[in-house]
Image (cartoon, rainbow, N blue to C red; front, side, top):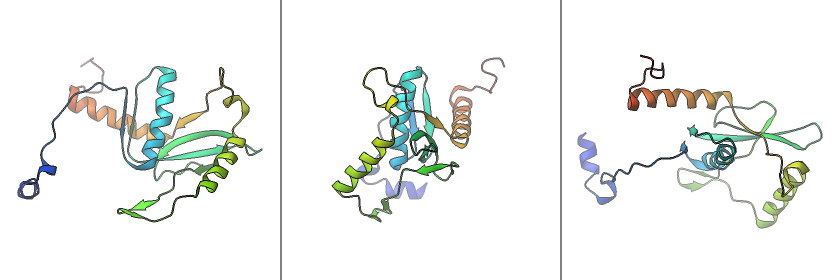
Amino acid sequence: MALEREFCKWSFCAKPEVETIETDLLLVGGGMACTGAAVEAAAWAKATGLKVTLVDKKQVWRRFDAQGAMAGDTIALRREAVPGGTPLLQPVMAKGRIIRPGPTLSESREYFRDQFARLPEAHKVLEDPTPYPVSLSSGLTELQSRVVQQIRRRELGENGNHGTD
């Protein structure tokens, strides 16, 4: 704790003010994977009316059918591979430094056109579109479940029997 006292002399290390809020979506993890997961999970949560909690750093994998059309995405743990999927999120920074230049405007435009052309028409219609299939990997689902159980035990005193102790 001496180290903590040494570093917390400066104002940017001051203990933060704690504010309690209610939320339907909690994301723990960083980078673009977390952002992608947030976008997809928010749409999924809204459609189902369920609370969604995603933890850890993620990767989004896209699957294509035999004709090359998009078949669905899977949100997975960053180091978890999804067979038959193509990873969408690529690192661009490491240790505060750019490790890969971003795409040019024309490259971004071409990528969008390619991906949009591969999106089935049922997902493009403006009225009553078919929801694009997005799923959580087994590894992410398992981790999410463990974290929720740990939080319930620690914060709510639950023992896993959901009130039947």
